[in-house]
Length: 202
Length: 202
DNA sequence: TGACGATGTATCGGCCCGATACATCGTCGC
DNA sequence: GCGACGATGTATCGGGCCGATACATCGTCA
Image 1 (cartoon, rainbow over the protein chains, first blue to last red):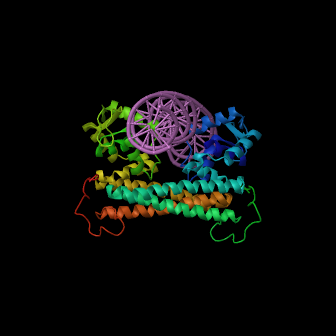
Image 2 (image 1 turned 90 degrees about the vertical axis):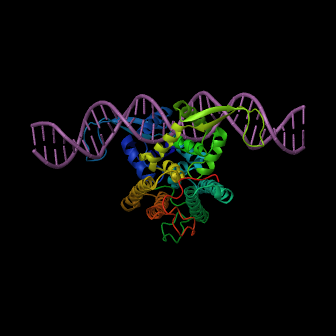
């Protein structure tokens, strides 16, 4: 999963580890607090060995404020890496539908096609619906066996599930009718087809 | 964290691994799907070695339907284990406030005192508020740099944060005024002090 | 009698985290 | 000028937890 996230970010721009972590924190802020270095660096090494990314120690810097010879390693995605990214993004296993996996996939939704988006959205919905049904079962069948706090927790969880299902329904509806997620109330008119394959970092 | 959960469940009744897993699934259903055996059995062994629980292979069974000599191992909490449980439940590190940790603590709230409950509730609130502020920052400062899907994800996350903070506020208010979580609208009258130290499994 | 699913215990590889170590850069105060 | 300090940067290690897998028994139904 982290592999997908790294590949996705490097698709936008070459970066070194520290920068990657910060970028991950803002883009995936909802999903994970911040990726740990204990995971990041070994993963980068693994991706490099696999040939998905290229490693390049650098003396010079890109941005003006820094002009020294700090030993930084800039990573750049390779052609094989882009292929790998597309595969990972499109294929959906069970882990695609849990919180972290879904979040990462969703983050890069603008990089894939509508069919894939719908597939993942519906898979996620099914997952949450299952959780919701489980909670309803527990509340109706064993509710009186649980103490007040546990009960309250279940209820709060159930509420969150229902809310997320509604959110997903809306996204699915939008997707089917060819709309990009409506920001708030804008975007009344739908773009013709794919909502601009990808163009962040303007 | 899993240690706390196991100790908590064994406090209610002796159990063997398989049963423990099912019980965990229903009580902590909101938090985690189901605990993996690859974690459960090693943890049980660890707890046994530490002296928190006692291990007893059994031939006879408790419940009527089963009357054979299946090699099951029934675990029972020890006096030291109960002490350990109380310590773990009351002490609050940073991991107490993330989703899993908070969920487990909350599940056993009826087993601890109001001061501890308030401390944990407020710590959790602070944690969520931090996440909320982070999301607001991103949305206001870098919102236009992100594509529509990422934006939508952040917004959904922000909404969930705000909702959870409100939920926590309510719980904290109730706790301060000496009420157990109000089931829905019942419980208009507050019990005198601690809401019955613990009595599930009636 | 044999297939099948639920029950039950156990291990292994792998992902990811937190703690930790170490080094350099820019900035600010003294 | 110079030292302290926080941000920047790379890296390793132990440990928790997961998914896959293996193996065995029980009850049930064909």
